[in-house]
Figure 1: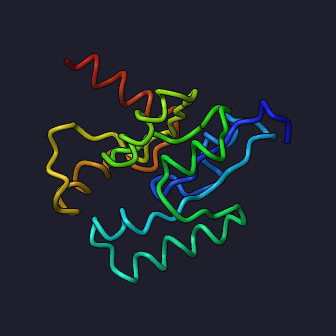
Figure 2: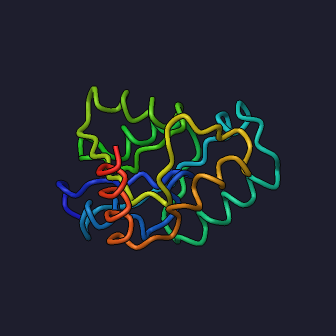
Length: 154
């Protein structure tokens, strides 16, 4: 790996090497996962959820570090660009914002699973799914066509 190659932070909201962030970072970039027990404790993660996340990370066959993402990413990146998927999780979002102070941070979005209105109550899955199922699993062309139709109706 050359010194210019970046780091890919594979976090639990994008725990896949199929995510577009990996392709955007390029073949020389090093994906890493960071196990953050303190954040898991703060969020009240059950043992079952922690095991699931850890098994997903193990399946990726990438380095797994334990500690806080800010300090580990700063140390491992050592000035190189940090690629990551944006996240609705305020903790992950804050880490990415804070890292921008001293590193190039490159957020790379994935195509959303579904498009839903921002005012949909997502506290209950059934309410969310009633809105999400309208666009979930559509091809890119179908999704773009549905967006154009909804703009035309407005």
